[in-house]
Image (cartoon, rainbow, N blue to C red; front, side):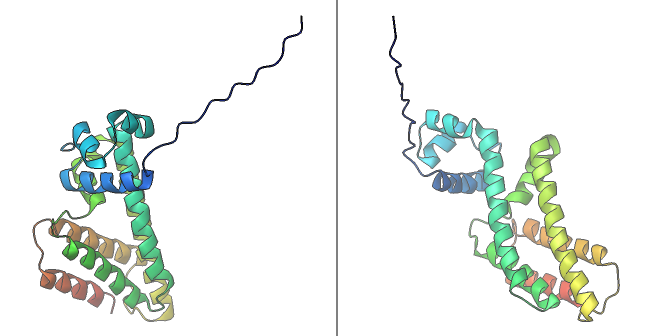
Length: 203
């Protein structure tokens, strides 16, 4: 007996929500409440999706947190790259990068600081994946400043002949310090002083 072939079509279930929008909401929630302070119920309520959709799409809270951190990192990286690629002067590039950080911090009325720095303080010490993401971000940021400083030294714009890597680390440390300070202070004068002194080191 010949059997006719039967075709079975499985319809893929379409999501009834925008994943990027949900991820953006997750960033804001984790950023405000921290990883440990955010419950699954907080996520369900704030993100506006069902618990089953949350698990189906993101697996668990930890995976969603990592995705949120990575999305935040990529967005910041794109803004930094735009400044570096469209500013010729090395010192002006560094000034603009520091001013970008300052604007972001001072425009945040909730004084959340930096999402990645917050994750570093709260989670990284006992979470390998978060630690790796934070360290990767730090290395990339340091490398940005290193390349800008090196370029400025080679052109003669930056007179300071200290090791370019050491100067890059100093500048990046200033950035991280600003991000921590912003959790308790929202005085533009404080950040203005930090920027001015940081730039003066490059004279």
